[in-house]
Length: 92
Image (cartoon, rainbow, N blue to C red; front, top):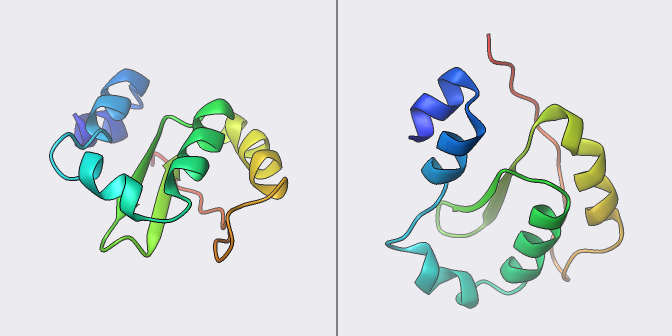
């Protein structure tokens, strides 16, 4: 689902592909601030939020038109020790 969603831009497939049902349910509560960041991202319209690697990075995936809403949500404050950085990815 993840690769198909990335290739085609299908939001539903991408959301399903970003959902980890095996590891993340156990890891989420162990990463301070993750649940708050995930909630802010979801409310701002992110397609999905995932733990990257060992948890040093949280990746929020959103469509270009949602990036300003994400920036605004994160500018209102992130948990201590976290910072937001925006990375663009083109379909081409």
